[in-house]
Image (cartoon, rainbow, N blue to C red; front, side, top):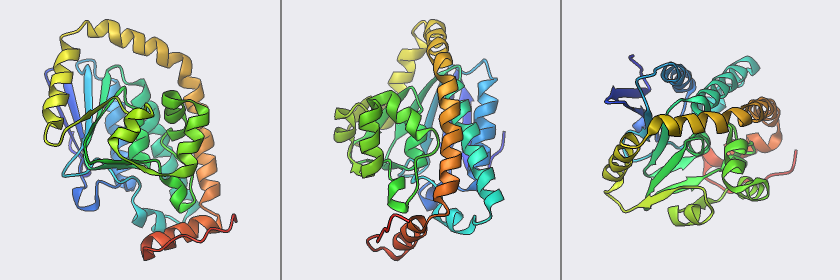
Length: 260
């Protein structure tokens, strides 16, 4: 399948999905979200694939949502479409009948970090930065961020991470249980290849059956959270704090939030 903003390669039971907007830090615009939703739904029905590696082209995984899109998508209907794509992406990712690996280099922020957290295994190269930083522009996590964070660290810790919006290095993220492996610079590709080989030489059908059982019981919760995230994000988009957060980001200054 041909896409403009992502790449997909399938060979030997492995698929590699790459975010392909490296000139804008692989930030996600409307087209990328649509293509991601379509691609993940296609993979969901592809029995030949047992491993999916998600990565970013260039030197960054994904900086999250495209700020330019946020500025220009003032029409409520457009933003509802954006949230519908995000819901499709997260549900398809969670239900994939394959082992999913996030291969992070450079940075994973915002929805980019949400989707990484939605993978079964997260591998991060040293010197990378990780951030659930929606709070900096007056928004809440989407892409299932609330669900995937609380799955990894529990609700109390998830709240702190969301509210702080701090930029974390791999060591900090590892200590908090947010990632599974941290590797030295230049070793990311080879480490992930070895991990893929290990999975493919294991009784992977049994592993995937366990994943199916565990995820099935949690799917209603994820579905409800995605609905609440969409409604909450639409609400936050109308706040003065969000507008201030966007302006401060563009003007490269400290935000002046007022709780309105």
